[in-house]
Image 1 (tube, helix red, strand yellow):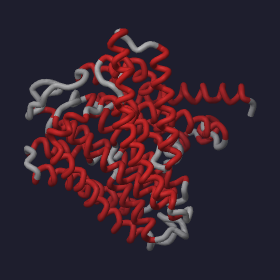
Image 2 (cartoon, helix red, strand yellow):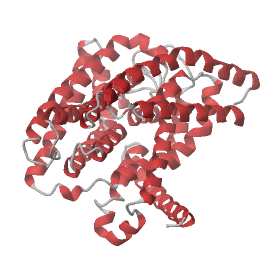
Image 3 (cartoon, one colour):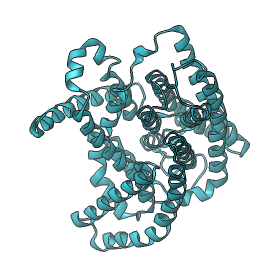
Image 4 (cartoon, helix red, strand yellow):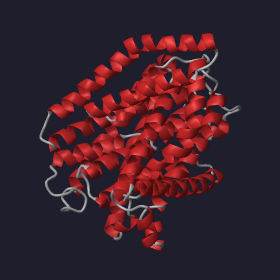
Length: 437
């Protein structure tokens, strides 16, 4: 296909994707779900699960295998990187000090309990032939992957729910973001070990874990001091001009490239760089410049790309639906239940503990990223991929209404918490308005 034809086809894909995501997203918001949850569902609907069933020829023409899908994949990765950078830009590390004990306890519980349950489930599933794991996958590889897939948290989606609920900067929001970031980092390290074993090269895992630690330390110490100059210049000039924005985007692409190269995935490089960026006017103007394009144009592409790999029709027997129910049960109890219990044991009020458990139980975007990597690497079959996607959608759908039930409806004012904290950074109201798109 000629370059001009590829461009024409890509523009058509964009038009269909954006229309579907906006329509389903608006419907989701009408029933109390965040826009991003609707976009996640829209991605599945555009794939073989619905569009491919109703109009298989049209679905194949619109999303054919080959170069067209490679372009969609690359564009979706750019959206993920920009989105995680914006989340890091909102993440206020100063607030963690007030809740460090709770954040660590919730994070530890959110890793250990679902990891154990996920490993046990993998031991059962791998004995079912090649239905869930391809031939050649060792039991410990299946256990590590399943454990990491169950204990991962929808960090970007959790952040967006917190923003839309105007919980930025509150103890509940800060604990949830800190614990989710830690859980996801551990999950990606486990995945790096599994991928290294498949390629029979332990240096892959060593490079990913050690390189990730070095990258984080360098960016959050030396890098933060150097980046502070951008904040000072923005304050002097009263604006973030095109030249300064170009520098930020260049650094972002380099950060994504470095962390992708060492094996911990580009989005973590983007998030850490966002955390290291100056706050105040600089962060506000950068967010205003990048957020609308990222959330409204680029991010929906990833949901559709994942949806194209999801085939609900593969789960077509009572036994497979039983496995799906089992995966859902261990995911909810292992993640949401364990995080709630850890928060309560650490002295958090019941309402806030339940809210944390509800938020941490969501899988969403990060689960889809991990599952796509596992599918492409040959770690799991399309059947298990679909089962895990169903789990990700259900747990994410649960998060917002449960959070509203346990916590949101008790708030006297948007963004108000039962535990007072010192204000820091830009106002939650401005952030929520920007993300709401």
